[in-house]
Image (cartoon, rainbow, N blue to C red; front, top):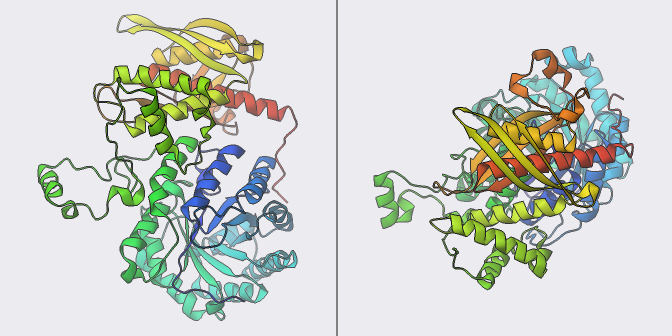
Length: 572
């Protein structure tokens, strides 16, 4: 077995697996590949690309990431390609399905797991401790028999498991061929001292511990995921399982950016090094926000809007005299854009083109539109319209939003594009919206309808639904200012699902989740959720764009379903 570098900290990113399990954060295959490419350029060592047995879609995503992202070496200072990993329960069907997906990557791993706490063994699995060991060993041996040498094993709910039983279990899976042992605090229960002590106990008491890599996997239910992970590193763990922006089930996972910067800023304290290119952190954070719709709070560490902002007079005075007085790191270190107001309504086409090229350099944006005069001119017209409405100039964040909105519309040509909206609303007026769509299902015809609603946004959504003949449930609606000021652009993210019953389909009803009766909500609990986003300096236009984007995703999914893309049975 190859020697383990005891000072190297391995970053295992599970944004595409555990992160995607956040409610409403569903990604399509192309979006997963886009994020995986940026993870590779970021310097992530291992990418857990998904749970292949879950569905044909998940299998296809992991397979394509293995094929298309697995061999990439661009920007990788480690000198090795990113390991592509698939998750599998300790079940033969899961393991073989995972292998069929990841085997195309030059470096691939299978991550298998089985619960080890008495709570799970008795109440969920209904097996004994002895059976737990037998199943775990059998799973690791099966993976090894497939020719996979990189094998990770996780005792689920290790944080609430008996320590001596964990030693017994992990000893046997090491003998069977496991190379990484991951110790999950699955429910985010432990305190940092407790988690650190658990890692230390297992590392010192488990025979063969020095032949494997020990890993952390901490959830944030008590807000301690980062603290627990760092405690694990201090006590011998040399792999950290993380997600971009800390997204994940319930309260989320450990945030990659927090561990990367903590260990970077305190190299001597942790005595580890890593290959994360911190200057890429902000851009991939923004990408994950845009693709998942999981908006982060302004005071989020490292990547939040206020992370490098100073409002207090004392702080401002100190920073002006010496940045180090109140900034422990510079925005450049994590790739936060300067937001210099370099463009405005008098800026020309060449200046705009140059700025866009600079912003998108080394990104995974499809930049072919820059060289296409017709498409670029459309974007430039959008820029001029925005610049005319801005008092303080157009920022980098505005430009990113313009490009995202433009590319979203390009992808929608198969179905619908918003042409115009007109809204009437007020204190003594029934909110009414008139909407025009370009219908690409009917040769690009312009279709028009109007509807009333509880408010302006609801009226817009009702009109859109009637135009496209869809009944939907509005599950979430989020509005965020992209920049500051009264002239800021707004980004809207919506999540919708299609109602199961088809009554009054032609009326295009929009049910609001919070107003639905309990019975109706339960009836929709298994429905697929479709996310849409839109940006504009008029939040009603942004709302309409976001809703049309979500409708297009819904229509695309229905087309795929008509091709009999059914879920795989995971109850084997």
